Image 1 (cartoon, rainbow, N blue to C red):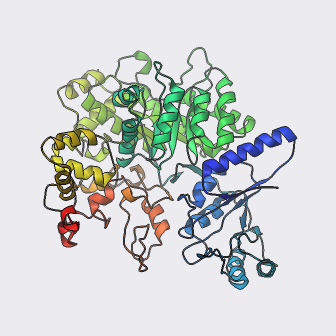
Image 2: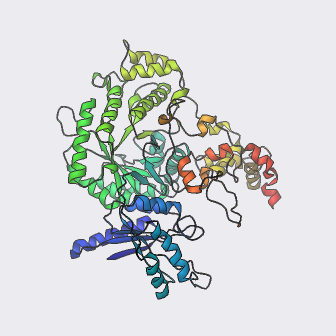
Image 3: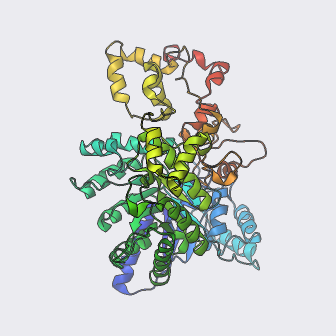
Amino acid sequence: MLLVETVNDTLNCKAALVGIENAIAKTGSVVGGRNNPARSRRWGRCSRGRTSMLFYSSLCHRDLYVDGSELRDRSGFHDRSSADAVGISKFYVACVPNAGLPDEEGHYNETPEMLAQKIGRFADNGWVNLVGGCCGTTPEHIRLLVQAVEGRRPRERSTLKRSVVSGIETLVIDQDTRPVIVGERTNVLGSRKFKRLIAEGKFEEASEVGRVQVRRGAHILDVCLQDPDRNEMADVTKFLEIEVKKVKVPLMIDSTDHLVIEESLKRTQGKSLINSINLEDGEERFQKVVPLARRYGAALVVGCIDDDKQQAQAVTRQRKLEVAQRSHKLLTEKYGVEAEDIVFDPLVFPVGTGDKNYIGSGVEVIEGIRLIKEALPQCKTILGISNVSFGLPEAGREVLNAVMLYHCVQAGLDLAIVNSEKLQRYPSIPEDERRLAEDLIWWRGDDPIAAFAAYFRARKSAVSAEDRKSMPLDGRLGRYILEGSKDGLYEDLDEALTTRGPLEIINGAADGGHGRSRAPVQREPDDRRRGPAIGGGDEGRGRVSRTAHEDVGEREQGQNNSSDGQGRRSRYRQEPGRDHPRQQRLQGRQPRNQGAARGIDSRVPGASAGRESGFRDCSLSRRR
C-alpha cells in the first residue's frame, strides 16, 4: 500500500496520485492509496486553510482504499468538516493522529491514555475503519489504542450521493442551494472589458472582474480565454495563477481545447467543472475530455448536442431529453462517470431575433429542463441565461433574463450562467414588464418581439446598486481597502495625488471623507442584503438560496471577528444556540460586501456601529 501523507495542498496530493498512477502503468502493480491531510489544530483546517470536505471533494473521483483525517477541533478532536466528510465518504476512514501538537522543544505531550480515550470515542460512534499513531506516539500509545477499539464495529462506507464542487470553498449543489449562480464576465467571448484587459496583458486587473462577480453573488466563476487572435494556453495559465489567489469559489473551465483544460485543472484547487462536452462529433470529445475529468477530478457540463444531421442542437423539449439520455448512458456505463458529476445544458436560444427556428424555443427550454430532471434526477442542469435575450434592447435584456431564470428555476434548473452584477429580482419587476417578457417566451400575441422592443427601446439600463463613480473620491479610496479590490484603484490614486500628499490620502481614505475611520458603507435594500433572490416573495424554492461552503473564514464575507475569550479571533459568525460551521452552512455564503452592509463584521462596522465603538477617533494621525 502506498501512503500519500502529510498533505497540506490538494494540488500536491493530486500530483502525487498522478505520479502513483504513472508508476502503476509502468510496473503493473495494484496499489491502494490513502490521503491523510495534515491539518492545523483549529477548525479542522490544514496549514493552508483547506478543510476535510475540500479534500474529499477533490479526491472522491479516485479509487482510494482509505481516506484519512486527524478529526481535530480546538479541544482536541472532531471538527464539523471532518464529521461531514466522514458522513459522505465512500472510502474507508482512517484516524492516525500525532500525540498532540509539539511544544517549543519538539516534544509531544499527549499521553497514551488521552489518545486512546479520544479515538475510542470515534470507534464508539462508528466513524473509523483504521486507527494508528503518527508523530510522537510510542508502543504504549498503540497498545492502548488496540484496547480502546477492540470489539468495536467499524464504520460502514457511505452510499450517499451528492453533487459537490469546490475551489478552496466547498459547494454542495442540491435543492437547498439552487440556483447556483455562475459568474459569466471572466469570458473573453462575452465581456468586452475582460477581453480588452486580457489583450492588453493586464491580467491583474482582469482578475478583479472575477472578484467583483463573486462579491456580487456568484458562487462559481466561468473562465474562458478562447480568443482566436491570442494564445489561449499562455493566457489561461497566466490568468489562473492570479485568479486562484483572489477567489475561493469553484471555477468552471470553459474551453474546446482539451490540452487547455488539462493545464487549467493542474492549476485549480478542489473540484472544478469542465464546460463543456457534447456528441456533435460522435464520441471524439468524450474520449479526449472525460479521462481528464476522471484523472484530475472535475464535474462535466454536457451540451444537448449530438451528431444528428437534421438538428444537431436540440431545440424541442423531446430532443433535449433524448440527447441527455444518450449522453448519460454513455458517460455512466462506458466511461464510469458518476451521475452526480454530470450537468446537462439543455441549450437556450435567442427568442427576440425573429428567426423562425427559435420561435417558442423559450418555453421548450423550460419544459426540457423539467423532462431531464424527471428522467435523470441525480444529474444537474445549467443554462447560459443571457443567450435568450440576444439582440434586444439592453434594459429589456435584464428583464427578460430575470423572468427566464425565474421560470427555469421553477422547472428545476440547478445552475445559471449570468452576470451576477446585473441580476434583477423577479418580484421587483413591474407586472407589465414581466408580462411582455413572458409573452416573448411563450410567444403570445400578434408580434411579441415588436411589443417588447418598442417598450424597452427608449429605456436605459438599470443603474448598478453600487455606482463607484458617484461616490466622493475619499469614499472610493476607502472602499478599495474594505473590499480588498484594485479595480479602478490606480486611476483614483492618480486623481488624488494631483492635489494631495500620500499621508493626506491615507487619512482621507481612513475616514471616508466623513470624519470617521472607515469608508461609508452604502446600505442596500433588505432584499439585496440576503443575496439576489430569484423567486416570488412567498416562494422559498425560487431564491438564490444558501450554499454549503465549508471555508467560511474569509474576511470579505462579513464574519464575526469577536474574541473567543483567549485573545484569539473567532473565524465564524455566531448566533445563540448555533454551532459555528453548521450555522454558516445553513446561512450560506453571501455576496462579499454583504456583511459590511449589514454591520455584522466588527472590523467593518456599519455606519452606526463605527460611531458607537469609538472608531471615529482611530485615524492614522492619531495612531501615530
